[in-house]
Length: 484
Image (cartoon, rainbow, N blue to C red; front, side, top):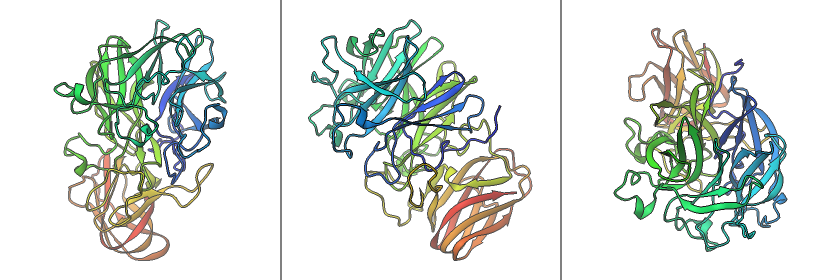
């Protein structure tokens, strides 16, 4: 039974778990992902952690703990900055145990850890290897990365890997990117690690092979994931433009995949009115995630970027339309797993903002922080995890827009912004991004957190967005939003 509203990010705002693979075990959804650090100088520097929630209460997430440490892998390089634990996936074996497949930077291999319970802890088990004991990745194959593991209904086990970004620094060890899309291996379930067949290619195209095909706008980049709905197989991946999570569909788990479409963009690119990155509704960067059916509804899991760079990524999810075997692109919202708009009365942290940009638009983030000038952004004041301070929207400057979707405002009459900063001007509040303001709030400089209040008009609906645009001098931090 639902007890809490669900937001994006659906985990605590001080937690940074991108690349999420959701799996249901005994009525709970377990999340397996990478683990970024707040303000980390590279991706995936944290050890693996796991969170779970009841399938009927997706706002109530429980910390399962730190489930695997990099030092437990015998091949772990000593230099932690480059040996990030990236994008794991989990499957339950025929022996009832739970197997975590993962990649560690600097190894070229796909590693495995195992646990008796889905929430860990996991113990190192071995490497995916050919029958002579040679780990995959050690025979000159294209770079092994982002493993996805999938057990079919007939008991056959498949591993998917691949990385197509030529020139990426991760390939400085001499590895080569894939030219033919993701690879698939059939794995022996007797030991969960020996290759029976592969690598084979699946028909998910990239680079030159994608030209002139339906894959050309969204060629394979990385972030393999596999799911089955009905009698169809859905391969999920991130395209070479990096910010789009896409899918391909087939009647088989290992061949014949045809391009399906875009599932979600971390800048809403591709939705009506958002033709390209110049019009993105949030800062873009890489993305990775998957699909899952929960209680008869379908959801896409992905991540967003915070703190003005790519390596502070956070877990997000949205309900997604699925009809006649086709998925339709979802939009980023503040209420993704909630099952509907948020209540129109109560206090909300501003880190649930789903649209965020300055007067010059957004940017594709890199590993180097973009300047603060003209750029509002999500951040926190110090800390890292285990109860660290909540995030908030920082540097709301002239022309900045902070957007939330969606609220039931049918009975909401008062709105209060809680802010702090050296700003003077007016905040315009809209329910449509380019619509007329429904209210305004004068803002003046304040050294302490202070509430600024306005009345909302009657006649608002049960599903409304709220967009805040500041016009004025200076900048303020936006912490909380009160609705009454």
